[in-house]
Length: 378
Image 1 (spheres, rainbow, N blue to C red):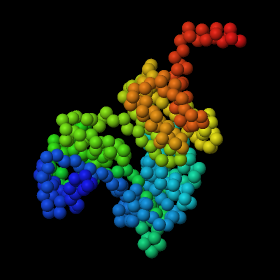
Image 2: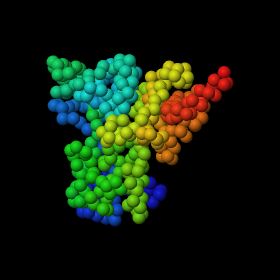
Image 3: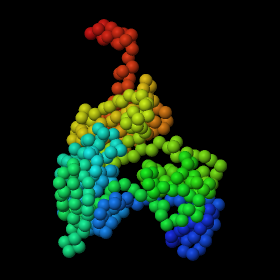
Image 4: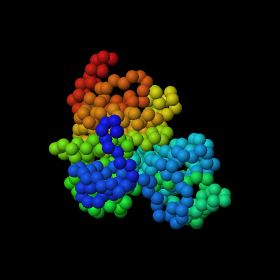
């Protein structure tokens, strides 16, 4: 960065006014400012948990030994990814969640496939669980977790390591944001309060990434930073709502998504149609033994306009980009169904799903004509 002419001041920064910050006793004045402090693992208010050496997504990769018994709190993307990874390394993995199903944000059909994969890998799913206490026995180097499941009797388990993956908490503390006139929230939707342009309640200050966005992904932080920088430095008004953001959970199989979910459309009263192709009929998936998956495309009712997609498969994270490009360029199902894929590839299931739209658009007259042509040919 210094080679690009950037001045770097290392240390903890605090706002001292609406146009200045202090770093290690040095006051820096600014005309524009971007807050990119990110987020950390949210630690639920479980009795004793904060006093234990629990792991988070930031510290788990510092482990040097494979835990015999590995516990995970939370069944979101990070929780299920790490649970499956450690199960395949050879740990006994126990996953706790207060919900009934894993990956609550994702398409229920997709989450069901991943949940079955976790069970096949030997992961013990303690769903509908309420964790009451977590203690750490330093002599045994063991975590002791006390919980109830399905409102049953209290149980206790010993763990060698415990990963906390119960969500993210934006880093808004100890910045003296009040002095800068920057509003933020610590309950409900947590983080900086920003406009669609990423401008905070102080017109000179913008927020980017996990500290202010509900989409907490590395690629989202990258693109939001570009928007904030342009809006801060030039007379532009780029909006984060204009971004089409795909994401992927890197389990086996992977779950990738872009656009709207069916449940969101139902809540908004928007009519839609769903087009699905199962990988059980895909030759590449059959060859590699990865048939547990599908491509699901959602279109606006009565049109071929794609408004959402979910893909479950070993390479879903790569496959979703094709649908993202189609949506970004306003390519409809008709055009997508004509895209030729190399054979054999799992991505060809995208073409098959899109082609389902064409089959439903045959008018009675067209069907009659086709039947006549077929009868003459025979």
